[in-house]
Image 1 (cartoon, rainbow, N blue to C red):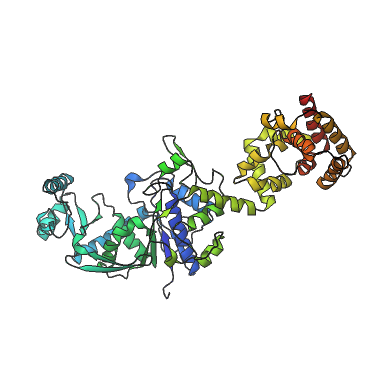
Image 2 (tube, rainbow, N blue to C red):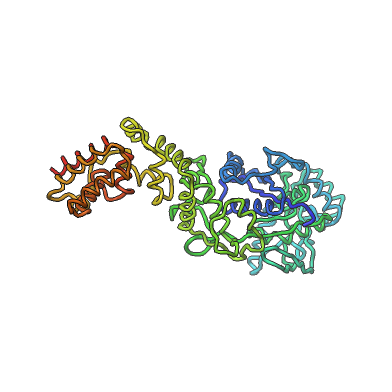
Length: 511
């Protein structure tokens, strides 16, 4: 590629960033970094009626959490700013005027009421109303009135918009990197509004002008913009500019049924569709991947596989590996079905690979905020080795919160015993066996799992006692149910005093 690769992620701050938008940002980032290019954030806030307070900060915070950095943005300006469209207002009018002067656009004075009346007439005749070549010469616009009358009406303050004059009778041959060749008959295109009566450009004009002035080489965006591609190519041509290359990403589909993934699907099936939690002004709260305990690396890896595949069996990719492997040509045309279970699988893979000390730190934070009493109780009794606990119980965990579910017994002695398990484990003779275990534990000086195991198992074997008769009630005494890692690892972590205390409590319970 001779031209430097420059791509942009250009969201509108109208609410929380959907994971479909995050994936678009990710694919732009991967493509830019693969080709040594720039990744730009531009905030498209021309529609002030839909602007939502806090939405721009949310977008930035989400991308920071996911470790997908921008090279240029409103807070990190380069040479192409400003990076918010609302701060570029004066830029767009010049190009709207240029299109009028060259005959590629015109002033339209039609009111909303006039256009509604036209639509109803068409509907009554079984037709669809499109404002374009077939009727524009009979509507209220500058193509039908003199230049003097047009100027008089503008100066008189009449409301008007500027519309693009779509060409008639032409076949456009367009190219999309993902979808290949596309042919469009210009007769079916409507004369889109480029400039609104409130003095703001529409998305179509602002988008084209900004992409040109910011030297964007590739426009990588969602499939929903595919119908706008013809208009955008025509605008580039009409302004005498070279168009960037286009790639339209497939939709992210519902896990079940047909259609695009929505917030309602997440609510119904219990998974987030937003990267971060979002609170509305009305007090509604929507779940986020961060707050639900997902690791950012797992979310990035999951999103990369929604519509793209590397062509190999490999599924776990770091961000750097994704950059190396990513190719737009390997993005699918058809929609990508979202799979909440696969997302959890990615999370599990990353949690298992996480360094034990880092995971222990996250577990410690979780305990401080969710189980402070349990943490204090445990620390009052013994200096708990969180790193060791984490390493022993993480195998069955998908989230840091699961570590509490798997290992709460390390912090809180059982007050009850699983009824079904107790029925099997606590039998006649169990009390005597547990008393003997207490004796054996008291005899161990170097209180390490291997030494404890050797002493207790040696006693069981030499006395030809069935292992289940000792190990089941011993685990139940320590944990309260039949779960957890190796019993002797549990005993080592709990320490001699705490372990014996729990066993003696079980002896009293059985008695």
